[in-house]
Length: 459
Image (tube, rainbow, N blue to C red; front, side):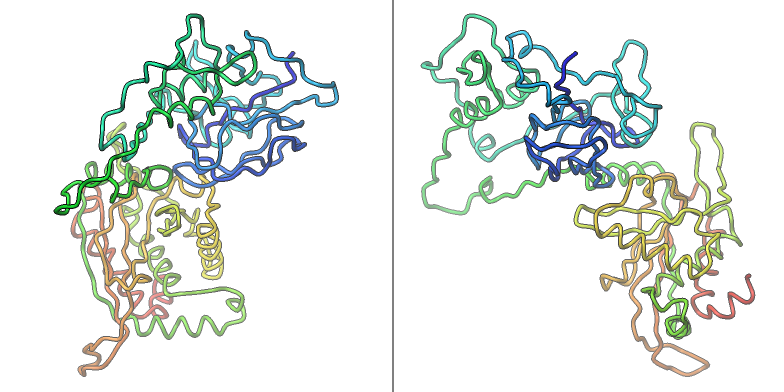
């Protein structure tokens, strides 16, 4: 039995098909332990650390940081018995064969490092977190360089050597050559037994590219690839785009707005900050908005529901997994506080603090971004008055909370400067009609106008 085992990139949850390697936590030659974190990978949902499936010595790292790897591709190889002496020289057969991690040591499906169930006749893919991989294979767009856009790829030089026999190269190397448009038969391999390595393929691709000739001075070109920036759409940004398109063209959106005097809410917030139970917590107006939403849901439970096209039903949730949109370096995510309606005001403040802190660190686990039922997006932190937010898939309502500004306001028959904000509620018109949406938004506004009176009257 081979002592060298290759660890393939596992499915990181919810059927994701690829991940970008952010950073390696080990290097070739390091001795690692079972379940020791070895690499940090960003998926379409979050950045996660992947633990080692075996103990041993790292013998090879297949992909550098910054590379996007498909689920099932090898990312690292480990010598599980380094005390057995030097490894034998590789043979031509071992170089051409696919090295796949054996199934020994597998545990129950759904646990870390476990195999995911697969269709009959299809191999298993290891699963780290989640419910298994999608049956469809991942699709990746080839990278387009400025040289490729400006001019057609030149033909292989006539002087390039051509092999007459089979080319020795591992499957990942063959795939890389196909992606870069390089003919393996024209490459003189520098690996063991003359095998072609990844470095050989990259050098061949670089040698085939010709520098772009500088254009003669003249008027500004309408199209200049050298002055364009191309940002790969991947990870969180890719999933966000897909979800927003799906939601926008699936659920009929309606948005209503309400401008509210929140002067009393701001005074109530100052009182909360002075209380000892809130002394160690960072609290903001978002806490009172979240509480207002949760109390309004109790009065209008239909708002906290989803549309099931599969069963032609409206599913009303008796729990509120309250999503809070968070802008991170990797894009917009909406983690949620599980069963937020059961939390006290102090517990809700603690949960919101933890949620924001984890999101900013980029360590939000995929489980925290699934099964949301109702969401809030705080656009006020950017100085924006309000907006028309798009529903997260599977939810029927989302509230936009705008900036709080000192504003002239009619208060008790006189014009005074008051603290005012504007709320925007988008909802799924298949579930929530204008009356229900208006009452729900009205009750949120009533709470924020006088939170102390609303808590006494509603609870």
